[in-house]
Image (cartoon, rainbow, N blue to C red):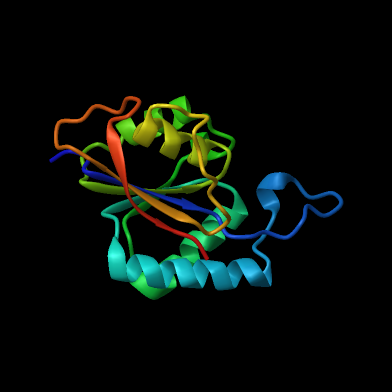
Length: 159
């Protein structure tokens, strides 16, 4: 088995950072909760992953929890490398999960929009934006290596 689809789910809208709170501790806003619910419904009808790798940031964890509330349990793990990751770091995370055909990452910009652009167009700066709660699905050929231009952006959804 090898990676065929990569699903990128950007965390939904979060509350601003409060005094004494770290960025990792920020929580979803009511708007973000609704966005995560809508993303879950869209994923339920389009592309459920075999495995999910999520950032340790609370807003990413909460986004995934709302997805799982709709989809049912998903094989999931946390990877601290996703938080504030560059496209290169995200590729390293993906490479460590190539044993599944459909992998989803739940995390952050600017890394996610840059990664989607890099894998689909070959240029990390060629991104169109990925709003909070947005989903991008990239499809690879069975033997594709994770390199610039190796994927096709086959679906994109935004709340």
